[in-house]
Image (cartoon, rainbow, N blue to C red; front, side, top):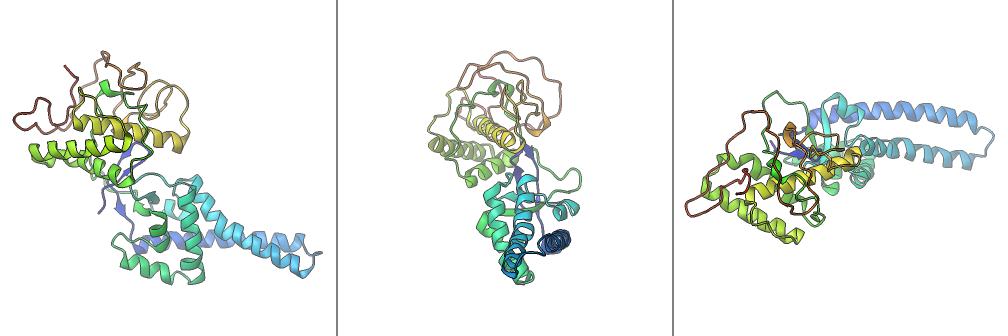
Length: 316
């Protein structure tokens, strides 16, 4: 089982899809694509009956490429990894770090799928999925993607703590383009498991991950922000940007942050009050009271540290 968090600001624990469910989803997609291909082919034959044989062959090849190759690529790109077959069986294509796929991911999967699915009748794809630990075919390996199950029993997900309200919008000016997917995944895994760690171990891991993030972003951790709170704030900012790219969030505040104009709730379903702060490391302002709800308590810091292990409290 792989613990992933989608890039749409939703924290989930997702399981990689195995061969039977993937095969049924691909079969349904192929049936639909073949039906569309036959209908388009009949229409082309009727419309191009006056053309010579070479033109008809060229149109047939173009129809094959557009419907059976370009069609699945367009569907996966526009639906962010949910084709008709995957939607029917509760599956979805995501990046290795759990974020939504883009056109380049769908293009690589579709191009490789022509060889391992269409030209070999799925034999190569089945062998690759059986050999892979996470059930990935060659298209997933080359594209850096993973097919996961979205339908899980209630209560199986793990909670990723949202950043404290006084950090809302504080990291909107960071350049996150240089942070690799593996580091994002490590940060998410730490935030979901930090309550299970020894306090000293958790503090050391948070400091190391925060140092790795600052090395990639070029901006140091603010002195009044403990490392775990910094990780949660930067992760929230990244998820908000992913949500804007995925859903085209409108102006105002950052999408997914709960700021005015975002139209999206905060991470983990917790509404974040409007902070009214500009980008960068502005000073926090008083927030309205948040309705009480039960949250997991973060680990305590080791002896000799002035800051708590998670830092999910306003600075002094």
